[in-house]
Image (cartoon, rainbow, N blue to C red; front, side, top):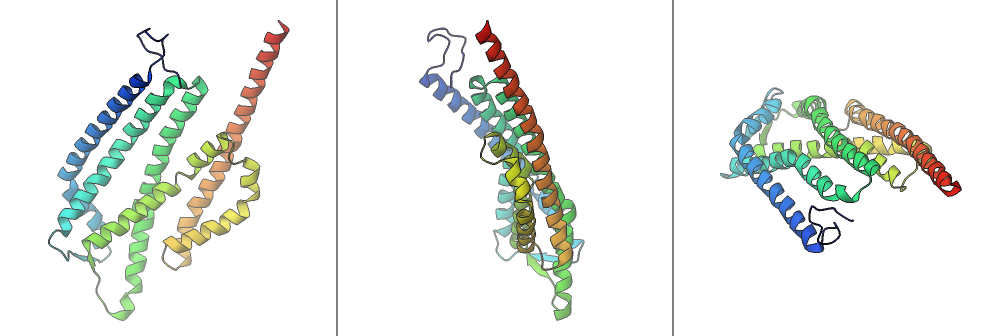
Length: 262
């Protein structure tokens, strides 16, 4: 990867020490932002914990903490997660900025779009879990225990850990279209393979939904349906980009032939 610099000492190319210096500076920027975001998250940790607990309280849950330091640990854990979420766009941008001088124009555009849509789909997954899935799962799980006449007094640590697990799972699941497009553009997977594997993927998706949801058909469908739609969206996006890639190759080959004839 060749990178242009203002100094013309090495023919306009950055030396290894220059690469390392730039990498160090970008890592320092990321660390400063992450530390600042963690401090902000720690400041608002109590508000975040209260908002998460209200989801359960609205459905009849009662919460306790079973160790003196449990609440403090949750504050720090949430501040770290908050810092990671806030810092993620910056991390992706710094990676892009470090690599972009060595990329072609189309590669820069593709990488930037992958970063933008990766962040968007990740937050959509978290929003889906927060607004739709988690309230339903909490209601269902509480309803299942009513027949045994036992009140729900849940540890704050276990409850927040459960929510964070669901958030992470669906943030990753919603990245499926972006990952599929990247693998397709790298030539690792092909659209025709994805079409042929559709039936098997639907079965696998329902199997995964059965693992991460309570044992009822409604919650499984609520999880499986978005995953199937994301799979279909992946096929559509890979098909569209494949058409553009073929056109780009055709134009490039035509220009090469024109140059050879000249």
